Length: 424
Ligand SMILES: *Cc1c(COP(=O)(O)O)cnc(C)c1O
Image (cartoon, rainbow, N blue to C red; front, side):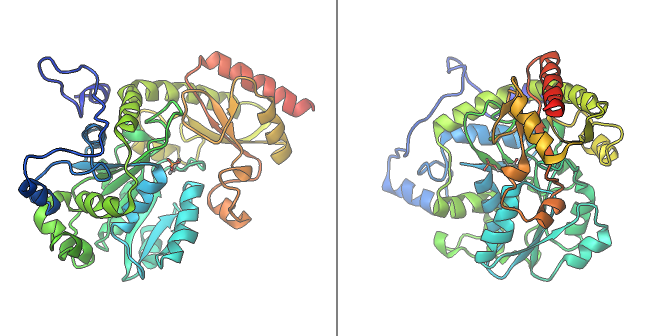
């Protein structure tokens, strides 16, 4: 099946007489005939739902759909993108461990990696996305457990060279974890380029309608965890009568452990109604992405041609430093988000944003409606100037998330706001 079809038909396959729409199984618990059976569930000896902190039939349908879209063997939904990131890392990192991340990533992820995980004894080194294989290798220590990057960075819009970082990671027997939020599996499937684990904030394009937070972790099933570096996946888990994830679950070792151990203990699992709403977004994802890309390309070209605009970051533009990389990793389009700076700097940026009528000033991105954000005063406010530069952000940068309104209306709004920003 092609993407559009998968978005509609994966995960739920109604049989004769069954509901056409995905059912909402709104239940915390599941009924079994015998104590014996429940005991087997607790030993992970049989498959089945026990309690909705670990799994739920509606959420499972969405997990299957997302796994199919990414080309993975399994997925675990979470209550936010941040929860997905946290669990994806803690699944293979403990106190005393270290990991590498490129510096052009989401501001919330920078906080998580550089402040909070550090408090738990997990160290992160940030590295330039343009680092060479040698430079990456030089940062890998004996206790380095993974490399992390974003396919299309929020908000720097750098394109992550997945193959290069996968090669660096694999030559040191560690996995590559990719945040694929902005690209979505419609525009890029990181597993096809060697990534091992994919994470998403489903709050963005997957939901698409700005109605609920969510996240997901997807496992490619390709990484060999039994290489001496990941004892927590290979050796017996005392909290499950000595289950050994690689031995007992094979290719699904990582995603099974994330669910039955970390999700059980942390409790960040969405409910059935969350899954139902996310599924509504997913059903139209491929169709929406096509239009986001088309509208954004037109808007980016318009901004790049305007004399009041200093710079536009959108890898779909021929002059963008990441255009070549985008052609490889995002051949069908670069999604709807771009960032740009006005010649008037920070003040003009704020005047421009406050003059917009159609586009909304919100702390969100990848919505169905066009929206703008000033990262230096919002999402990236906690970052030092040095971190801002490393994250690819300038004080006057505006992040523009082009929506699905008619592109003529979006351009008209931008045009009038540019005039106001200049004339005030
Ligand atoms: C928004 C975002 C996150 C965090 O997701 P939430 O759902 O807001 O917790 C992580 N990574 C990227 C790239 C994001 O855009």
